[in-house]
Image 1 (cartoon, rainbow, N blue to C red):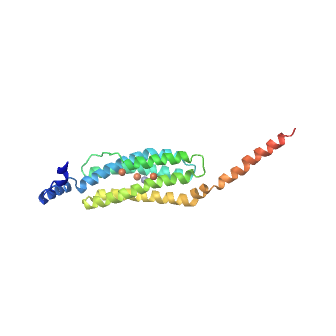
Image 2 (image 1 turned 135 degrees about the horizontal axis):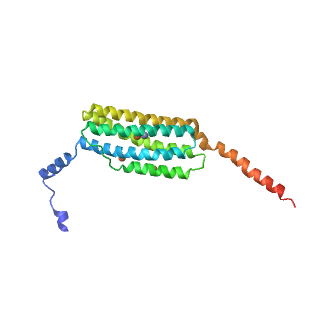
Length: 209
Ligand code: FE
Ligand code: FE
Ligand code: FE
Ligand code: ZN
């Protein structure tokens, strides 16, 4: 025990060797392929989740946007397979824990807001979290592919990045043009006026003895 505190530090030569071997354990290409596998897994999960999110939406405009992005997501899966191929690698996925979490939260927010005028605004916020994660990931992947000298991969990843950015912009437009106003509750106040008032009026009338 005492030894732990009194032992002299390792010699500089030894420290250097450790650092050097660690540096070379992982190359930029390893990092790139690892992150590519992460996004390959993410897109497959997103493709599974989008139909559920679209079904939960009550705005036709939002449903169309999500269905459209589902088609793009399927294309993206194929594009990622092409990217793997351009590196001479077989496509493989590695669980994207972030997407698992963001989609879980999306499920939760969708069920919490079901039947409420906030449902579309809630779904948009959940979907935009996915888009932002994708935008960050593909921005890095595209840059790394360029640095690794693979122009075809960089081009494909750039195409995917553009689709994610456009999907995010479409969601912002729907939020600003309708979903957020709906969530403010205009429709809800109409319903509240009719239902309880009508019931109590008829109850009073039939209540005479
Ligand atoms: Fe995507
Ligand atoms: Fe991830
Ligand atoms: Fe969160
Ligand atoms: Zn997306």
